[in-house]
Image (cartoon, one colour):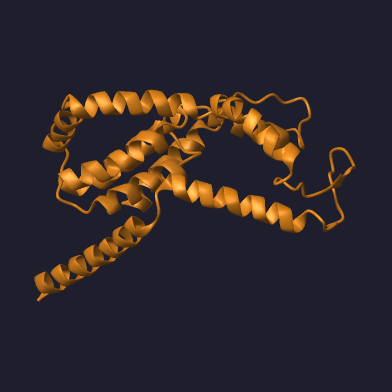
Amino acid sequence: MNTKATDQKKSFFNRFLDGIEYAGNKLPDPAILFLLLLALVWILSLILSPFDFAEIDPRTGESLEVINLLTGSQLAAFLSSMINTFVTFAPLGIVLVAMLGVGVAEHSGYINTAIKYVLSFTPKSFLTPVLILVAIVSHTATDAGYVLVIPLGGVIFYAAGRHPVAGIAAAFAGVSGGFSANFIPSGIDPLLQSFTQSSAQIINPEILINPLNNWFFTSASSVLIILLGW
């Protein structure tokens, strides 16, 4: 009876994940979604530009206005700055390099071999926490978690005979939910240090905080996130 109930639960969960995958596959191509959102912003700017919302920029004290992006000057500025906007987009470099590396690794068989090697000594029951751990540690490489770990989570789960959407969800939980948690110092530590120092200076204005002062907290948070994701 317990085995049948477990099978029913698993089949229901798999059907639920299949439903998510089906709905996701019905979405348009990301490029089409981007163009639709771009058109929506243009139309909203045209509709809202005549209205005065009486909003003030706290930095300059000047009034904030909605600019009509469908005027000739704005369209000319959009087209003339398009290349510069694309080139100076911060994640572009890591995305191009990562996609190049992933493409070579995939077609050379490196990823399949590495996955099989990892699965050979990683028990199936520990696959989820190991994936979440890798996702958390990936913050050391800035945006690599979003670019690499989340898609690879689906590939790893699929290779292990589990639903790929569950692998994507587990990797996303580690990358996004564990953004400020890590066993290894990363770029988020100086940011956390600034908040901690501002808070500590309320009591002692002369105190200076080390950027690694939150390491014990972020490490403990990593353990907690792995357990919760598991």
